[in-house]
Length: 258
Image (cartoon, rainbow, N blue to C red; front, side, top):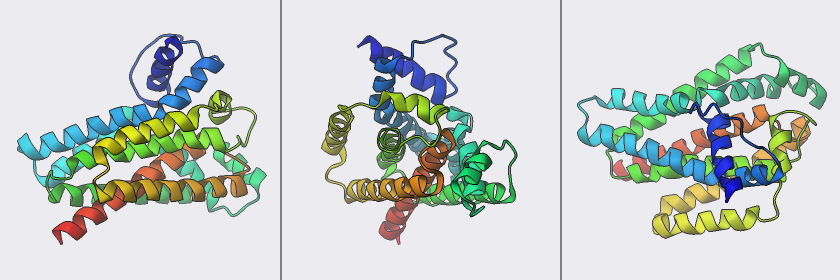
C-alpha cells in the first residue's frame, strides 16, 4: 500500500501543478503502482471537470460562452499546459514526413514550428467549440464528462505498458519500467466499477469503443513513425484522446437536442 501512496504523489508531481515539494521513491514498485493508478487520476480529474461544469450551469450567473471558457481552461490550469507542448512537437514531427530518426530529433527540438502552432490552434479551438455546444445543451449529461479524462488517462497507462519506448532515456522510458503483468486486471476492475455507474448509457459504450480504436491506431502510428513512445507522444496522445472524446460528447448532445 505504501507504494500506491507514493505513486499518488508521483502522479500529482509529474502530471498536475500540485506543489508537493517532496522527494518520493521511484523504484519499480512505485512505478508499477503509477501505471495502475492512471485511471484513478483520470477519475479525479473528471469529477473536478464535471463538478465545475454542473456548478457553472446550475448556480453561476455566467453566460454559456463564459462557462465554456472556464471548463475549457480548467485542464490547462490543472496540468500547467504540460501536454500541449507534446501535441505541438508531435505535429511538427508527424507532418515533416521524415524518417524515424529525424522525427525523433524534431520531437527533442524546443522550437515550435508552423505545423505545431497550427495544430495547437486547431486543438484548442476544436475543444472550445465542443465544450461550448455541450454547455448549451444544459447539465443533463454533465456526469458523462467524468469519462473523458478517465479514458484518456487509462490510455496513457496502456501506451506505457504496450508500446515500447522509442528512446532509452526520457519520461516514457522511465515510467515504462513499471511494466506490470497485473495491469490488465487492475484496468478491468476500474472498467467494471465505472460500468456499474454508466453501464446503462449508450454514450459510455461509444466512448469505450472509441477509446479502444484510438489506442490501436495511435499504437500503430507511434511504432511506425517513431519506433515507439516518448514523453511528448504520451502528451500528444492524451490531448488527442480528450479532443476525440469531447467531440463524441458534442455529437451526442447535438443529436439529442437537435
